[in-house]
Length: 278
Image (cartoon, rainbow, N blue to C red; front, side, top):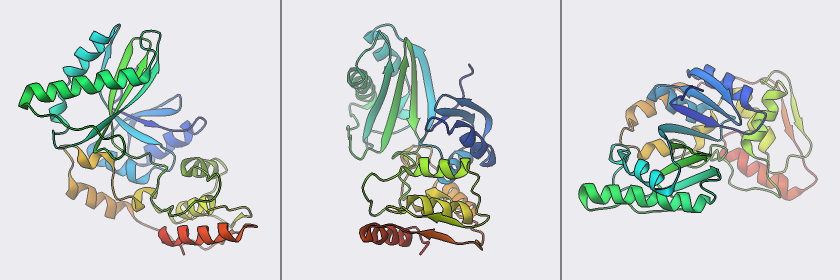
């Protein structure tokens, strides 16, 4: 299978919906995978995808692939990546590892070895090293190992994209925003007609329905994305795209949300205000 520059991860069953979204947002060479979609894109399209996709969880930028049969192979190949081209010692970082291999059986070990290689490279270049921050890092690095095949990617999204930024409060067992949007899109909701949610909880389904109906990009409410800390981040380009992608349309139908819980209704109202839908 051809290695594509970007991979957008998603939930099982939403791959075809995400394919359609990516094409509409300007992605090329779009290829469905298992719980993911590969694609190629310019920097502007990458920004647009992070802002506009409703069904992607993360958007990863592939930076290297190699074979590793032992820990020395992993360390050496990670060390040889020109990390200084992507971020500086002033940035904090963390490693996300996913391992499906008999050669590497512990994701924590893979993360630790990857961290060591990155830190050692920075030390060799300028005697300084970036810090590790597992709670709020500037840079998120994704390592995926399948048997001996290792893929290394930068996470352009930072926090997962289901964290839209409009949820200020949540009720019991909140619905994932990506799942909610995917359900609506599979059901054929485009904003034509009326929408009723009689068990709205904290309002995820009606809010996502309203965003779809008015064509409001879900990433509009987020203050940061992972690519904002990359060395090649173009702030002027991002701001132009953010302005151009926001073209809300009128909605003539009715969206109704109700719940047996007064607390749930209160939470929904708060989230609606944050989403500028009140």
